[in-house]
Image 1: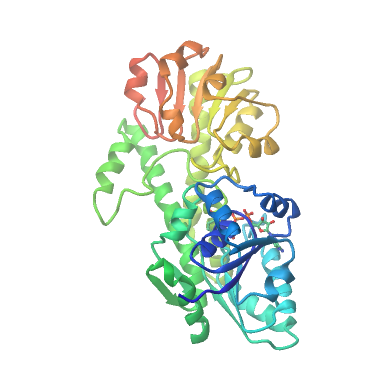
Image 2: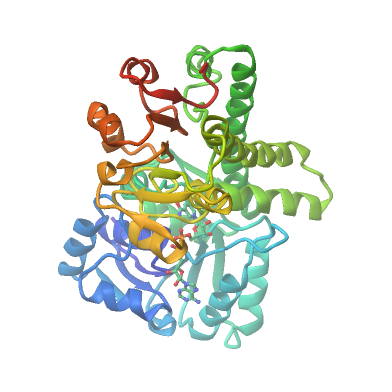
Length: 434
Ligand code: NAD
């Protein structure tokens, strides 16, 4: 196996996992971040994010001297043959992706390259960004050092990121030159995964199209759920019956409060924006976005319909992260729902197994509780937002005793409604009969 000297720029959810996993398969990796606090933490052996298996991987490879951290991009770039750009691409107000970080990194790479370098876009970027990165590097690359830009979008999922990276369904590489293609093929060879080699623009589009398709599937089943509620059918059964058809599949057919997180909402917006910019109005995606937003309003309406006046009522929020097994609260439905409830004067008690520290930075006037039982004590309603397994395993007899009013609104259809009703709860899921 050929071992490469790799630099990963950005030590976030994608960058840190990429760096740790590439070192695990034998490459020598330096992970760079301009947030000194993150780099200090990593030097102290602490992992800034919650991700299963990551700490072990980082510690093992640091010890083997295959992985190190730096806050100097020039230090990382100088010695590397392959550089992954894994910085954030947050949404702007108009929905477009803010590529400021990408451009800044491209410029610095150009100023510090020493020999032939492959620069891989790992961040999710709109189509044609690769060309811009290439132009930027050419402009600042005064010594005319040879380089190639490739697009290598990442498909890992937070919560199972290490597993996803080490056992991917596919590795997509958008590439122009045979030289860069060989480097990328050798770099990933130990993963023994199917590789899709294509041009830069197609690779960039594969990422946006994949995330937008998954978002569409979620909004589709949520729309079906709305019809189910109107006619008294059960969307979980409809989804089961649909999903057994292999052409449809069961994945992402779960009705609920809709999608959130750092990827789906912003990638959908960015795809809508870029399509419009190049001359195609992707109406379908606008509907996907609208349906997703309606789900949160619907969830709050269910609380209003049951409790009538929310002012002064105590709502127990179980789950703050945008999905289980992560501490990420970026664009998490919980944050939006809490703001909506607070706007109506509701009092919030909240719990999440790992996301409370991050949520505290984002939320005001919330009582953060050390466990779910503490959160539901004296509450007028339990609002299940994130389907952590711990919440499914709660002792609901005990929950009923300590709540002020036995109302459960299950935003993820994660609980067994019939059992809860038998215990005396008023239970409502999403897209299911009352
Ligand atoms: P993140 O915010 O967790 O990490 C980005 C990191 O880049 C931060 O630590 C930040 O300090 C650092 N950074 C910014 N500018 C820098 C610079 N000039 N030099 C060095 N470091 C810099 O973001 P993330 O979740 O890892 O996402 C990164 C990209 O990957 C985004 O484009 C995202 O859409 C994409 N992506 C994310 C996921 C996911 O599940 N989070 C999955 C696939 C793709």
